[in-house]
Length: 73
View 1 (tube, one colour):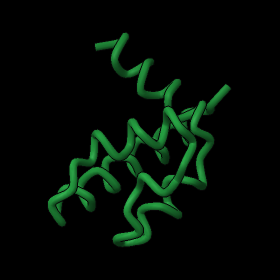
View 2 (tube, one colour):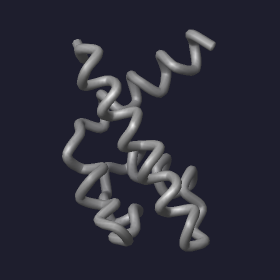
View 3 (cartoon, one colour):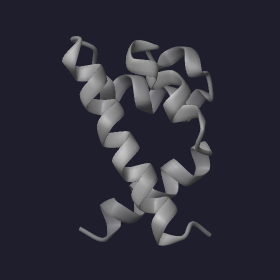
View 4 (cartoon, one colour):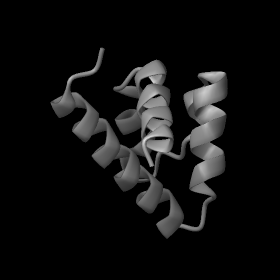
């Protein structure tokens, strides 16, 4: 189970990574989804250390948070 502090950290980091990828013209949703499905961090650009930033969290935790956010809307 992810505590609220960790959930906030992951949400904030994902938004930041999304914005960093978008800023340089990439398709952030495609990159993030491809990474989450495959587990291959090569799908995430190294721009602004995005690849290292996203891989410090478990993919399962990221997916759980995304699903919770979707369901609770």
